[in-house]
Image (tube, rainbow over all chains, first blue to last red; front, side):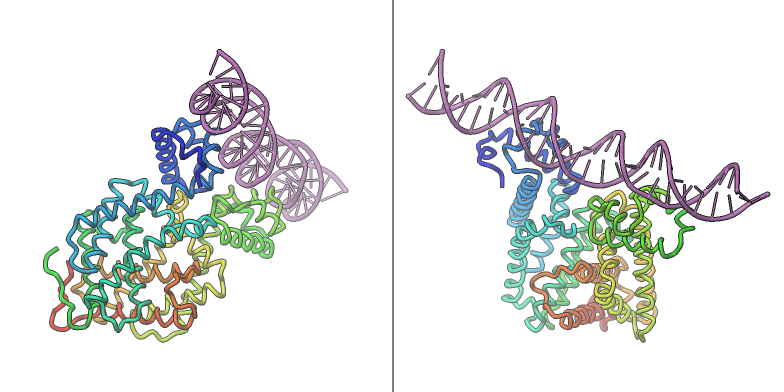
Length: 219
Length: 219
DNA sequence: GTCTAATGTGACTCATGAGTCATTTTCGAC
DNA sequence: GTCGAAAATGACTCATGAGTCACATTAGAC
């Protein structure tokens, strides 16, 4: 948690610190990130820093939570602009949104990837719940929607559904956010987006009630 | 690369060093791993260590490659004992094998997970090729087998097939090897294994040759 | 046995980076 | 203006851990 002094800070100074920290933690993992570098970049003396945060860990937690919040809001804005016709289009929107995020806010993308895909630090346990809150919100929306409309077969065990959605989403997000693509992936973004849609179409058929498995036409 | 002195070492001493290093790198990531601890555990003085390896990085690379080799051999032995009837049973065997690995050789499992799921250190670039060699070998076997028998629909674009297999495998392996299971996963191993089988059955249907061309998704 | 090169050893060096502290500056209350 | 508390500051401390080095021991050649 930031101290009250931090909250009293003028917006300009506070943002300078926050931005510098975001960049630092985007570019380096927790252990390799350096307060000295953050201090230098933000032009805030190291001594002052300790007025605002207990220490490195408190800053990291704050920054990551902040980044997750921003990312989620970014997606909310993005998805509200679209007419989503079923739960699979929601999933599609969420995944395709990552391309935009990675391009427009690479620092946020990098931090997001770090929290979600980096194996357990003891910090993980403090951060993961924040991530999971968002993730659960999304999955709940996906599932209730799908079950309500009958687009998802009620016969399939919930854990299996969840696994499949999770596996697909995680895999795409990871590649998109970290930017490391396996050599067998097409290189152009257009074709990658197309592949996203195709993989979700497959899921639509796989999870769909036996009868309703029709595929949309077009890319 | 280890030095020639290292290779001249008696097996007992060499193994002591190797085992200590494996444990250290299994329990801590590269930055947090400490040579002092390896020296203490292996009862090999730190000074001597530098006769065998250039430094920490050389040791890490050697240890990880070694761990990947062991893991792969372990799987080979494991899978040769089984009668695999099609490529999906190969995939199943590979995934279920991870349960055994995690139980019998948790250190290897931890290192494997670290290399594959940890985001890019500059070390990653030295290690990933080793992993990918094995991974590619597996995928090639899976694919040629599946296409040869017709269990995999030739119409589906190779990238899509590969993505689906990859997403499924990666997701399972990660959960099994790191041991962190999402709360919505069943807790008993028996049911988890069952779920593995079910998810692969779904894939079998999804990738399988279709009657009447209702699935024309290939690019 | 003796000489030499290879190997073994652990106390030391040295860079690094988180966190502290004594001092100065700012700011609001009166 | 003056006083006291809060905030700012950067030189310093201190722990840590990778890598070195001067000396000791061993092993092989003759």
